[in-house]
Image (tube, rainbow, N blue to C red; front, side, top):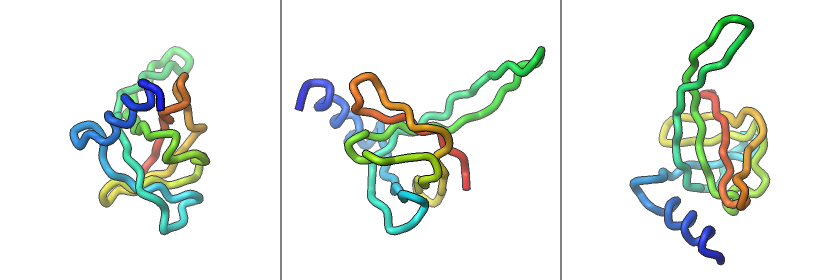
Length: 104
């Protein structure tokens, strides 16, 4: 394990940074437990001459825990269930995957 992988592992195991979640491939239980870092940035999108503000929900997960995650899979965090929309985006080191989610 290199230094970057060790640092990412420490961040995802920190109880103040990440939460437990369940990844359901294809949306089908039982799934597997993963760690997720929630992000909810506001996004401004231009459409013609208008600028549209919207809330988003994204999470970062460890690539090693979710090697085959894809659009349509589901993520359960607490009592909330979300569907992965769009393609998962991997970081440069291929250690972290960012997922765009929508409530189910």
